[in-house]
Length: 276
Image (cartoon, rainbow, N blue to C red; front, side, top):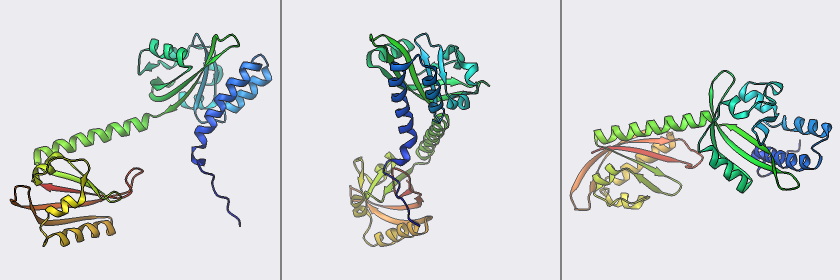
């Protein structure tokens, strides 16, 4: 059986469909906005998009409420039409509404974040994109809004930030240095305690070779073997070794190495914690 290759950018189809829909809507409504069959055709097309797409007039009255908006917010189309969109969703903007409106009238578009509320009162954080439609005389007549729910992403980022802050506090109190080794670039990211342990001037990123030169030549092979084992087994390792600081003093180091699974930004990395 023949296999067809997925065209480059196919994974971005959702966004492309939405943007194309917005352009289609702008063109067709400006030319044939009085034809009911055209409006019905456009509404059906917009219902195919998973995004919440809302069209409103310049008084914020809802003119179109697609299937994606029904799913995201909980109101059916016939319930939302004619309502003031900001009153319905209890919108909280990330910047002053007057500034948003001024930017929209000046640039013809606006992008930002807002807090909306579902029918049951649940707040949502949305990434919102607006496009302004003008009539043949240049007067603004409609605003097309495309909203994406990013609540889970924002909550995950907040939890990650909180964990990072707690880790930083814990390592500072325990006087533990932490570093991460990006295997793709062969560079290290050190915290302040690590630079203090080694007596190095802070540098970002930290070259791996500078670290390896500080390790005692008799101990380096064993430490590197521990690293390789952690990478191969995708696990952890423990090592003890000596380093020579910049002032030529010798210090004994013990470290726990942990393999970090690949991410979208870092293919492979190791993290090591070294008590001071």
